[in-house]
Length: 237
Length: 237
DNA sequence: ATGCTGCTGTCAGATTATGTCAGGAGGCTG
DNA sequence: CAGCCTCCTGACATAATCTGACAGCAGCAT
Picture: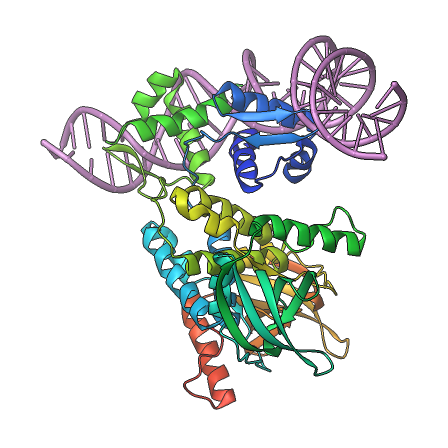
C-alpha cells in the first residue's frame, strides 16, 4: 500500500515547505523515482488539488486548498512536546510559561485517543547545569522584536568595554548556553550579535525602525551565508 | 489509478455526511466491492485518519479530523516555533521531519492574522557544530518506547567493554550534544542510561515489558530525585 | 434471537505501479 | 547567448498491488 500513502505524504511535504520543492527532493524523501513523483503529482492535480509546478523552480501548493491537515501523528506530538519542554527549560520566564500554556491548548484539541502521545511522551530535556542568568528582560526584547522597535542598550564587550548603542533587534539566536540578540547596530552600521548576559540596561524606544524586519532577517542570513561560504546551507532557519 | 483516487474520495464522503455512513453505501458510490472499502478504510486509519467504525452503525469521521482553529498568543506561537525549530535541528531524521510537519499543520489552522507570528518568529536555534551522528535508528527506539517493547542492544561501555543487554526503554533524555535512552536494564536489574552514540546493534523485540511505562517513568524519576536529594525539584519533566 | 454491520483471512487472476531510457520545453544565471 | 536546473510526457517490460468472491467471527440495535 505504498502509492496511496504517498499521495497524502506528497501533500504534507508541500504543506511543510513553504518554498517550492523540487520533484527530485520529494523523490528522495519518498524513496521513489522522479518519474513516479511526476505521476503522483499528476494524479493529485487530477483530483483537484491545486499544485503549481514551474520549470526551473519546483512545486508549490496553491493557496485555496481547503482540505484541513490530518490530525497530528504520534511522531508529531512527540516533536511538539519535546520542543515545548525545551523551551520551558531554556526560554525566559514568560516564554517558558507560554510553552506550558501551549501544551495545554494543543492537548485540548486532541481527540481522546491521541492525548497520551502528547502527555506521556517519553522525550525529556535535561536540565541545564550551569545556569546563566541574564539580567535583561528577554521577554521585553522579544516584544520589541515583534513590534520592530528600536532599543537602546548598554553592552559589555568581550574585553569589558562598555558601550551604549541603539540597535534594531530582529531576532534571537538560541545557543546551548547563551542567547544572542541579532540586531542592526546603528553604532557600527552593521549586523551584530549581542549576548544577553552582557547586556546591561535595556530601553525599548518608541521609535520603530524604518525597514521591515523580515527583510532585515533575510539580509542578515545572506550575510551569514556569504561569510560561511556555504551558499546552499540553511544557516539558522 | 483508481485506488489512490478512492482514498481521497472516501475522505470526502465521510466529511460530507455528518451521520454515520455504512460501508455498503460507500461501496456503491465508489462502484467497488464492500471488501475493498474495508481495505481502504484500513489504509486510511493506518495513515492516522481518525475514522471510527461501529458495527451496526457505520463509519464516522472522528472529531479529530478537522483540526479546530487554534488560538494562541504571540508568546505561545513564539514558544511553539522555537521549540519545533530546536527539534528540527536536534531530533533524529524522522522527528525532525515531524517537527516541520507540525509547524505546517499548526500554521494551517491558525486564524489568518496570527500566522505571521508563527512564521516570522524571530527566535532561531543555532546549528550544532560538532554533530554527533548516532549509528542507531533513534526513530525505531522511539516507537519501541511508545509501544512498551523490549529491546535488545549491544552497548559499548565507558571503557570500551561491549555488552549485550535486553532493556525496557521508557524514554529519551536530550542533552546538549547527546541523547540517552532511559531504560530498565534486565542485566543490572536497575535503571540505566544508554548514550545513543554508544549503542551498536538494536533489535526491537516483539515482547512487551510487563510494567506500565508511565509507572516506570515515575519510579525512575523518584530514584533520580532521591539521588539528588532535592526532593521537590522537578528533575526532568 | 435476528438482522445489520464492521472486520479479518485467503487466493488467483487482473490491474496498476514502477524504474529506466529518451526527449521536449521553459525559467534562471552568468 | 549558453548552460543548468526543472517540469513534463511517452513507451515498455517487469514487479508489485489490488480486487472480488467466499467464508466466518463479533458487536450493536431492535
